[in-house]
Length: 230
Length: 263
Image (cartoon, rainbow over all chains, first blue to last red):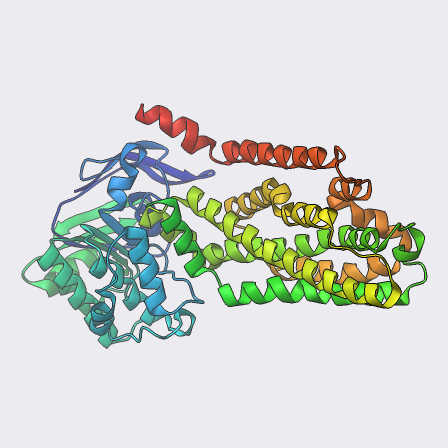
């Protein structure tokens, strides 16, 4: 469970979050939506431990970064802004380095690349942004993460790529019980895929709710909450 | 993860071939420049310093030039190795993976020192060969005596003298996320251009001495079995002391503050 209690965060003099509260339960695929500047990336950075709240308490499965950093790092995977790799190395070498860092076998790399349909011999710098987004899913496929946070993973990807990414995330959610949080401002026709929605605007949580069985009417409801972002 | 595994990863992600080429090619390039300088300039240091024998001559020239090679190669490697992480902001991804970046920087330091050693050895070998050739031509009195081995060891231990300086630079570049044209392109070019300019200007030779002034001075006044070696190893010890001080400064949070939290 991801829990934020009375979080204050600001960049120099710009206040982003003021006494912000949020609770994301286990096992869900959650969609974080909001327009540019709503605070989505900052929220993801806070949850990923790349930024620290100025005040308040942030816990991941009841653990705090201050005293359980290593434990959280073994549970939580995140990509912020866009996935990054060593461009001068091949796809395989990048994943091999990850396996070495995590102390796991590299035997699975080939099969994971097959699932993702990416050539392991290609240098990462030759991949498109969409391919890199897809490749970033290799990490949670290789390692047993419990929480996956992806910042705009559907941007710059063709509809087939989006479908593949969503299918893989569903698989990780169902088979490994991963808690998944995705930020996007392009919900479009893929809204039905998510279990829960968070709507953020100017650092405020406007809406948090479960998906209805009737998605179209639910979408209209979301639209009413935050006109123009869907 | 232990230190050896960490070192293996660092080595794995290093652009090995490129680094090797730089470590070997640049010393050779400087060696060519120096050879041209010695043969073409009447004001060259070879005529102005009273060399007792060919070996003094060799050491004199080496002391003048190798600081630059060392500085250039090490600077290039430091920038490039830190750049691997800064490129595309991989640094953040390492944080998410839970990689201890302090250990990572230490491993980078080891690799940079290894390549620097290769560059110095290359220059040294090229020098010895050329002076052997000169010796056979002009009877300069070059000998593979005990002095030769002592001085060779001293020169090869030069990266240890530079240890604290390398570590300082790695940390500064890494902490401040400096990834810019100045460090990657302009600075190395300035270094390259400055070499021939300095070489043709006799009065500039003292500036050339500056980076390794202490060591050069040590070598010039070198008589066998003198306290010079003790003095030079004192510099090594001093360098290691500086390194420890820098290490504590850069890892203060991890070493002191976080230890307090867990205790």
